[in-house]
Image (cartoon, rainbow, N blue to C red; front, side, top):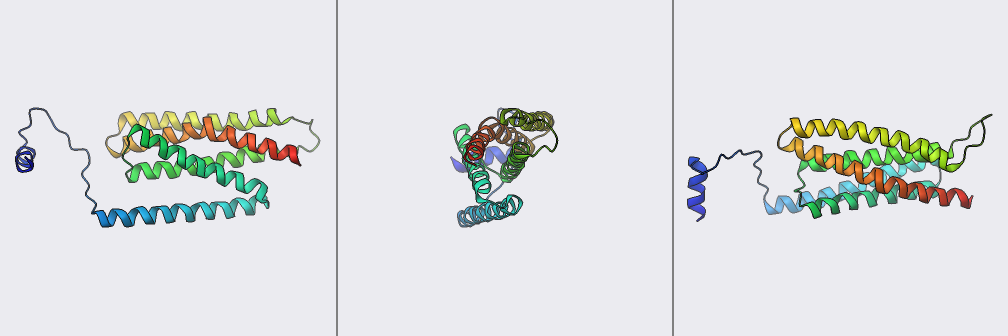
Length: 192
């Protein structure tokens, strides 16, 4: 059967038109090494981002929730990819990295906006500050989603996977992890 199928594919005598979008082969040993290296690099990058966030805020009280939310976002994106049945190729991994990096940026926007001290201005409550932060974040989400939608419809192969993974990662972050981080931040602010 394999030889027959190989002959059909080589000669191009399929009853339907076949477009080969991508063809990759990874040996099992190389794939296992790639997986271990990816996990190590992911943990290392999480640690580096955590150190930078700690330097920015000088307190673990804000740094740890940002890193926890970032890790939860990775789990959400990978879980969503698993449920949908996506193959995680390099473009999808790049999209996940972009979504996580933007997620950290959005959490910094939330923290900065809600902790900002207005000199000489009226006292603005937490909800109003959070709404300001979410306006910035949702505007960025729609801008990114619209550009990725264009890339999805105009692109082919890897570009489609990159676009859909980026949109899914941003959507999960904006509608799940950003509000979750804001709730954690609100609890932390009340404790002070």
